[in-house]
Amino acid sequence: MPIYEYECLNCQEQFEKLVYRINDLITCPRCGQSDVNKKLSLFSSPGSKSAGSGSSCGSCSSKNCSSCG
Image (tube, rainbow, N blue to C red; front, side):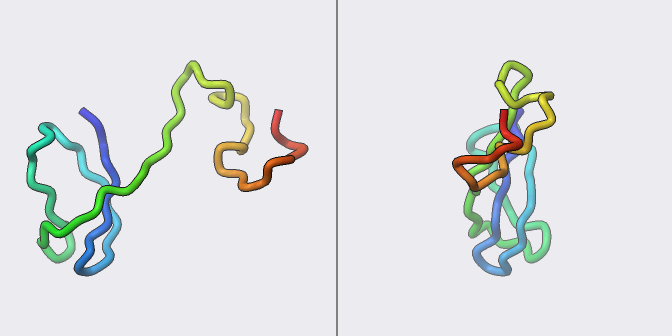
Protein backbone atom coordinates (compact mmCIF):
# COMPACT_ATOMS: atom_id res chain seq x y z
CA MET A 1 0.00 0.00 0.00
CA PRO A 2 1.62 3.23 -1.11
CA ILE A 3 1.88 6.46 0.83
CA TYR A 4 1.06 9.49 -1.30
CA GLU A 5 1.76 13.17 -0.65
CA TYR A 6 -1.10 15.64 -1.09
CA GLU A 7 -1.73 19.37 -0.90
CA CYS A 8 -5.14 20.76 0.01
CA LEU A 9 -6.32 23.31 -2.55
CA ASN A 10 -8.52 24.94 0.09
CA CYS A 11 -6.08 25.58 2.99
CA GLN A 12 -2.69 24.60 1.39
CA GLU A 13 -2.05 21.96 4.07
CA GLN A 14 0.53 19.40 2.89
CA PHE A 15 0.05 15.88 4.19
CA GLU A 16 0.75 12.20 3.52
CA LYS A 17 -1.89 9.50 3.28
CA LEU A 18 -1.64 5.71 3.19
CA VAL A 19 -3.94 4.69 0.32
CA TYR A 20 -5.60 1.29 0.59
CA ARG A 21 -7.68 1.48 -2.59
CA ILE A 22 -7.35 3.77 -5.61
CA ASN A 23 -11.00 4.88 -5.21
CA ASP A 24 -10.59 6.02 -1.58
CA LEU A 25 -11.80 9.57 -0.95
CA ILE A 26 -8.88 11.67 0.29
CA THR A 27 -9.73 14.52 2.64
CA CYS A 28 -7.54 17.17 4.23
CA PRO A 29 -6.81 16.45 7.92
CA ARG A 30 -6.85 20.18 8.68
CA CYS A 31 -10.06 21.45 7.01
CA GLY A 32 -11.81 18.24 5.92
CA GLN A 33 -12.16 19.26 2.27
CA SER A 34 -11.67 16.67 -0.48
CA ASP A 35 -10.32 19.17 -3.02
CA VAL A 36 -6.71 17.92 -2.88
CA ASN A 37 -3.87 17.61 -5.35
CA LYS A 38 -1.58 14.56 -5.37
CA LYS A 39 2.04 15.76 -5.40
CA LEU A 40 4.89 14.17 -7.32
CA SER A 41 7.00 12.13 -4.90
CA LEU A 42 10.54 10.86 -5.36
CA PHE A 43 11.79 7.66 -3.81
CA SER A 44 14.92 5.59 -3.54
CA SER A 45 15.18 1.82 -3.63
CA PRO A 46 17.94 -0.45 -2.30
CA GLY A 47 19.04 -1.27 -5.86
CA SER A 48 19.48 2.34 -6.99
CA LYS A 49 22.96 3.83 -7.46
CA SER A 50 22.70 6.50 -4.77
CA ALA A 51 20.99 4.34 -2.12
CA GLY A 52 23.28 3.94 0.87
CA SER A 53 26.18 5.74 -0.79
CA GLY A 54 25.85 8.85 1.36
CA SER A 55 25.52 10.99 -1.75
CA SER A 56 23.00 13.80 -1.68
CA CYS A 57 22.77 14.02 -5.47
CA GLY A 58 19.08 13.15 -5.41
CA SER A 59 18.36 16.57 -3.94
CA CYS A 60 21.21 18.47 -5.62
CA SER A 61 20.14 20.88 -8.36
CA SER A 62 23.66 21.15 -9.79
CA LYS A 63 24.61 19.12 -12.86
CA ASN A 64 28.29 19.13 -11.93
CA CYS A 65 28.78 18.39 -8.24
CA SER A 66 32.12 17.30 -6.81
CA SER A 67 30.40 15.35 -4.02
CA CYS A 68 28.45 13.16 -6.48
CA GLY A 69 29.99 9.93 -7.29
